[in-house]
Amino acid sequence: SEADVTVNIHVDKPASKINRNIYGQFMEHLGRGIYEGIWVGENSEIPNTNGYRNDVLAALKELQVPLLRWPGGCFADEYHWQDGIGPKEERAKRVNTTWGGVIDDNRFGTHEFLDLAEMLNAEVYVNGNLGTGTPTEMAQWLEYMTSDSDSTLANQRRANGRDKPWRIDHFAIGNEAWGCGGNMTPEYYTDLYKHYATFAKTPHDNTPLFIASGGQNAQTDWTETLIKAKKTGVKMDAISHHYYTLPTGDWGKKGAALDFPESEWLSTMVNTVKIEKFLMDNIAIMDKYDPEAKVAFNVDEWGTWFDVSEGEPGFLYQQNSLRDAIVAAVNLNIFHKYAKRVQMSNIAQMINVLQAMILTDKEKMLLTPTYHVFKMHVPFQDASYLPLTLKNNGKYGEGENSVDKISASAAVTKTGEQWLTLVNLDPNKAETIRLDGKYQGVKGQILTDVKMDAHNTFDKPNNLAPRQFEVKASNDNFAFELPAKSVIVVKLNN
Ligand code: AHR
Image (cartoon, rainbow, N blue to C red; front, top):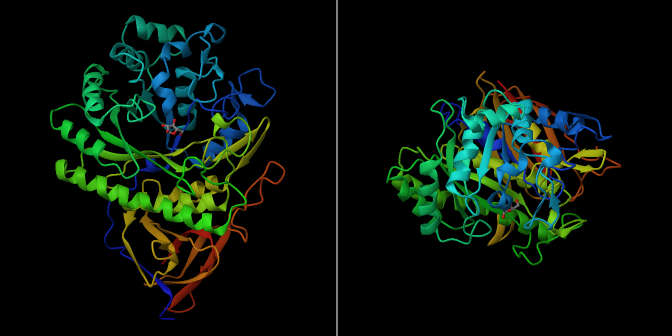
């Protein structure tokens, strides 16, 4: 009918490539994100390959993880890389002062991280220590990882079991300098960035993209100060920004991961879509100083942050439900739209921490609804964004406290396949979607449930999983129903 939401895909106007690194992951020395989550050690009873657990490795391969960020986060600014190399039993034991005060015995270090990325065929993003490390320490870490020479550091790497240098794709100088990274002003950090970047040298054929750590939420002053500094000739390939979605918006009482009222479903949606305005405001500043878009604007931390579900509060473990799946799909649609500038995003975090893909309980493992959304979106990695218009899109909620009901994006792959993703943010009402144009049908997957907090448990790991979604067009007026609180990712057949 006339009132249906109508999708018009502008297939004749393919725009920016959706960098596959928008589907990047973040792994920090935090809680059970690394220890237990992926690293169990060669002698563990949990089946493993060289210390990495087999079940998690297989799940990550399926996900086609394009990029891994490590070792933090806040942890990065207290991490001294020499602690994590050499014979494991001789490695330093350090207190993880940011996350739970536990001992980190550094069994997982530079070699373990870079070898993992190689096994997954993922690009690497190493976050350097500006907060408590020196420019020398940072420069030497880069030399240790990238030098093919006869230097003492390169030979130390060889003695530790790695002959050839690794490829380092991305390297950040500090993290959240406005907070855990040193409580700095944008001006002070920018000067330090320039200082450290000057000495962060690498072989000419193994030069990472250098990332400056920017602001958070609605802030734009970090972006402005940094991008202006770029004019002075300092190397800077990207500025990163962070935004977390809290149901209540209140860090003191963020809201529960499960069993929440509908008011918190709505406020979660209202809060998560704010990222679009944050991107627009920051990108407008970048456009002013860098009109050719040489410097990227990356969101290297994002996702939901709830009250801790169980265990040590400093471990940030939370369950993950259909609501998280919707949040993920909506954010990915927004990142697609700004793909010209947004070259990378890293959801926080890959395993057992915040909005995770995977949860583990000792030998058990489950895939979260967010994992399923990322997997459904694999065809969008490196595809070209197709602009679209949505007619008759309604609102869920009232006034300021409302969001567009439907979120959508489309892309065309290198082989010419057209893909569409549609999200219904309304938890109560299905929507009829009409596709403008000549299509024979759509085929793909849907993730939905009757319960707002539908989720997977170690006893019922397949409670919420994608199902086939296929509709054949019967005439020119091609319409189908998008259930309440659902995500579909479909191939368009024309
Ligand atoms: O992802 C958890 C933490 O959130 C990161 O360590 C930090 O950068 C941010 O505050």
